[in-house]
Image 1 (cartoon, helix red, strand yellow):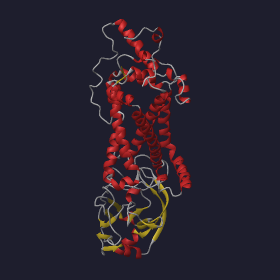
Image 2 (cartoon, one colour):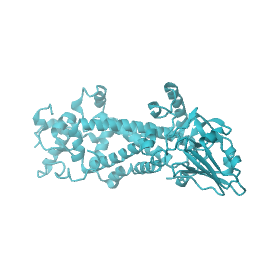
Image 3 (cartoon, rainbow over the protein chains, first blue to last red):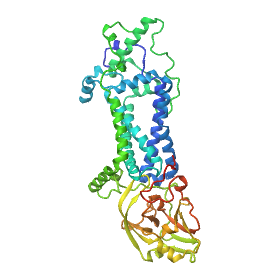
Image 4 (tube, each protein chain N blue to C red):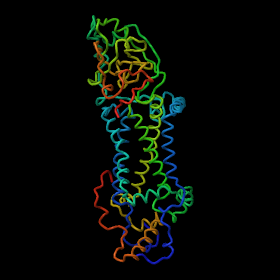
Length: 240
Length: 248
């Protein structure tokens, strides 16, 4: 698969997502899938005829929604998860050259891409914003008739529009994952080949190699960025 | 082992900064949009819904109705589907504290003096369908036939689904615009909308309008209905709020 010179992609696989990140990803994925599934049951008239049980479906939906921020808060509380924090900082920033990559629809500037390409960064931002807006409007709706009716009408409108955004983005995300099996595997097992990084995230590969070189200079005993064996040691719930 | 290459050593880690904080800006903008949309989005939604309805014909039918923002019915049922009751087998009973208990067939209901009204169907959760035309028998007219006895103060409604219940005070039940409805939008009420006969309480939130109406019991006190036992207000006048006693 790599079109790059072999030497550049040689060596032990890189840890792309550590255990904390994968646990966060799959717990949020599970909650979002439950929310989309139950949300569609509540939204599509034909589903009522088949499944019905509105109160039960509603309770599951509200419970999953209330739990939605818990994995992120748990991962970030206590000052842990350094790699997650670093990746969030990466996702946050978009450099000028990355806009050029985006405008050319990925045809130019690939050699400057970091761990996440700007498409992934925008997807992460819009998805996070939409899920946050769904959480807030969902809280407003879950208070039954406590808020003024115009607010409830507004909250329903926001909830429907943002849900449509999430469904489209999640569908696109899953399609991209299925189209890039090595990338998908790295969200299950954690590691990804240097060959993949050389093609899709060359700047990240350079960063990692520089970090490893610094590390091996200071402590010659350790070559790996992260200890081997932590890659597959966490059960990964949710679909592969 | 990495090969020595002086250029990569100068690579600035991406997470150290550089570039605009686009992610944070997008997330905060969308959260702001969510809050503003909740507080002020009702007007935008109704305008959008009118546009969609004009573009697609009747918004309550077909895939066009699934577009977010369109005014369309969301179909609720608290059991596993819609109860099956044919027009021939349908019976509406009016029992309890009445001088003349009634059991009416659909044909007998249709033979009573009809009342028509057009009203916005308003769900408590914030969706609505404007200009829905209903035809049926005024609940007050049925009560006049049954003649509640002294001491009767409330009505208890049951559904053919065997689970759903609703309530009204006798005083509320005698206000205008409350129908035992058999036609909706110019055709018999469909099963998904609660046919062959449902209650339609125009001045109150949709959950008051019990679907697949089976029985009306005249009683001496209000017994909260299905959703009311789950945190929704018993006196569900459209526009009213319940205060913070909801299901959250």
